[in-house]
Image (cartoon, rainbow, N blue to C red; front, side, top):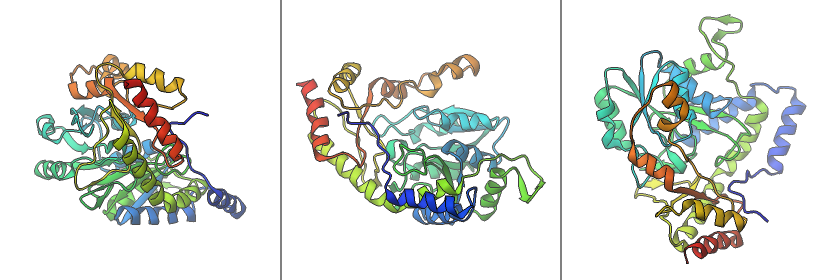
Length: 359
């Protein structure tokens, strides 16, 4: 039996909630979306949350609502899923990549100021693998240069930094894809404390309508359905238990794994381990992957090519920059299963299989 790298946790509660929506006849964006937004905002400690059709549309909408567009620059990480940077391109702006911290895999704050120009409008820190960025440093830089902060919290539901939740230190954008710590099957969420900004996001999300069939702005159909929201509501109730299990699983592996560099959780941070990502030194990663797969242990490499080295960015957009820490991480990282469905026997198998390779 294969130990999967990810396994969405769906129960009877989610199934019954979906059936209730189907029976109600209100299937598109309706009361369950509104309820989901309210409880999600409460989780993040923000006044507002805006549901969207995906994490990518959450980022896209969030940028547009901040007025990011043609000729602007947004500073972000090269070591993330490509949607982080592509969402910037969708607005007509240009991503500017800053190298990462080799320990946390997150954007290195000490390198941000050197990348700021008169075109810079925002910083998009990516809270990668469930660990938030160094937000004190990033907030200080943003305030000094009057820049917007857009937290890409796609992988960090309920992660914390010095008691503050992901998505509460700037505008937040979350993904609710099936493999995330919680899911709505597909969807996204924007978080904010700004009432005017909340309203602008809602206008963009629904075809630019300020009132029904009156279109004053160019908008999109980025709405979430009540079916997705019903799943999300039930998943949100389970998120604390899901995250606690991920943290216990991560602790067990960190304490018992040999030969790899386990992820870190700096003091004052609450890591929610969307991925348990280790470094495999000395060029042994690919051999370890083969060994794990042969033993039916699922693995993932997130991400094998940094965004600044992706062919579209190099060949079509002309990126030509060296970011050595991101490039080294891409060559060494390996993610092991950490999800809540793992049994103790699964965890012991994962650990013993890795340790066997190095022995």
